[in-house]
Amino acid sequence: MCGIVGYIGKKDATPILLSSLKRLEYRGYDSCGVGVVAQKDGKIHSKKTQGKIQGLTDILKDKPMPTGFVGISHTRWATHGKPTKANAHPHADKTGKILIVHNGIIENYQEIKEALKAKGYPFVSETDSEVIAHLISSLDKGDLLEAVQKAIQKLNGSFALGVISSDHPDKLIAARLGSPLIIGVGCNENFIASDVPAILDRTRKIVYLRDGEVAELQKSSLKIFDFKGKQIKPKVHTVAFKLDAVQKEGFSHFMLKEIHEQPKVLSGMLSSRIKNKKVHLEGLSLTDKQLKGINHVFVVACGTAYHAGLVGKYVIEQLAGVPVSIDVSSEFRYRTPIINKKTLIVAVSQSGETADTLAAVREAKLKGCKVISICNVVGSSLARESHGVLYTHAGPEIGVASTKAYTAQLCMMYLLGLKLGVLKKKISKGRSESLIKDLKRVPSFLMMILKSKAKIRKIARANSHFGCFLFLGRNINFPSALEGALKLKEISYIPAEGYAAGEMKHGPIALIDEYRAVVCVTPEADTYEKMISNMQEIRARKGKIIAIATEGDTAIKQHANNIIYIPSTNKLLTPLVVALPLQLIAYYIAVERGNDVDQPRNLAKSVTVE
Ligand code: AGP
Image 1 (cartoon, helix red, strand yellow):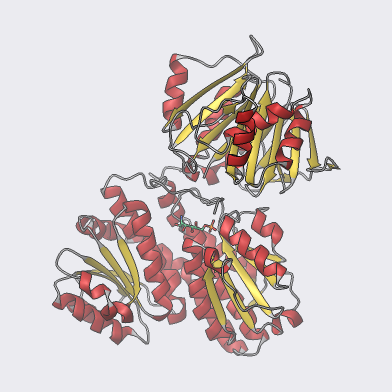
Image 2 (image 1 turned 135 degrees about the vertical axis):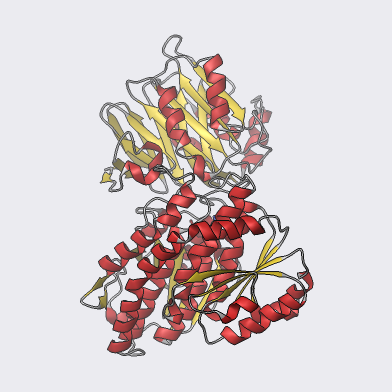
């Protein structure tokens, strides 16, 4: 999704804006731009281009931007209009005095555009965002903050906004409704950005702008107002994670670094959440009595987080005996889910900014449900809007393909299942303690798999030419198959389908021939024999099989072309262990095909629009 960075201070804005904008590249974008109020002539100057920030940097090397102490910059992920230079941000008003950057969608832009056109405002782009610049200009009576406040009253949809004006070179205005925006508080300088990593090398003091707030930044002051103009005291947070967390640290890609971080993330999570052999879920903000009263859990999530929720369904139903429903968030909000005050909504999201998941949560709250979220980003919209939040604390996830956030979400599902199971007396103290013991061994299993990554790379390379992949799993590893397929298609662009293996004969078997590869998730399981039957059916049709199997399973050799072994673990916990080889298969195939692993085409890290 689009990325915004803004700066006001005593330094030249452009280099700061470009280097900070680069840290938002992971969000996904197709064009970019930067604009400043120049010191030499007091005028607005801007440069935009289709393509990468490096292209913009090259343009600025040839024709440098004049020095300016206030500026805004943007990476655009096209929604309205193609990814062209004209559609890239910043957008200027007709006088060329006001410059804006916008993330989100203005739903009533057509109506506003027609009205402004009738008044003689010329439009040069196909975007919905350009209306904002002209609208502010049409309402500007000499007070930029006031003009922005009036303009946003007229906008329907979602926005994070950065606005500068040559009439007010000492001000940077920001506003937020439904799209993330943070403020960085520095010493004689202040920043706005779509996400913390953008400005982490400049300041750790962050104000999370909330929906319905407008901010006026000057180099040494920050004022925040609600949309009605009432001033609000800013709450400054100090961000805990270090700069290393947003750097590759010697790995060739963020995705590979994040895959390697999983043992540490899981052991950190388990040691902070398990005390005296009991699960502690600080942040849940539900009393044990309230938890015991829950008779239905409903998970809402998108993409990888949805797959974590699917595993959660198997886990919670098995450990706690509570029925679990699950919807992708975009479906939940447009149907009539059967939920009530006894339903616990569990919203799962790495970013906490996914528009569909936020909308699902709002819908559920209207129906009186308690909402808890499993979320990675501290202070995100989802965390703030949920009644309780279970932070995964996996650290910033930069790779667009989610890896460590997924296994952290899975781990939280096990902890939640254990907590509910014990409270509802569905599992004994002994079973809970033994599962906790098994959970604690998972990080070391992941380390062992990482040690065998050269073999996984070899297998991935040998199979990277296949034009189509099928991923099969059963029971609790059916979601693992879905996740394996999603990872592969996201970064390798190879069509990949995830299926419950039992469904193979109901359609996907038609795909199988010698040109297809099938990844069979086949660890120790009650359904192991059934998986073997599926593998035989694939072999009979000349399909090539990569099996993920448990160490010591020699019998599988006669069924699979390639085998990736995982350590033997509790059957219920296998999704946590098989996730890593599935991620590595996708990673190495994408690398082999020369793809941009961290910023795959068309994808955005957090999907902040519907
Ligand atoms: C994961 O690899 C994907 N990039 C995507 O499916 C992602 O999981 C989904 O967009 C949900 O994001 P969230 O966890 O931030 O809500």
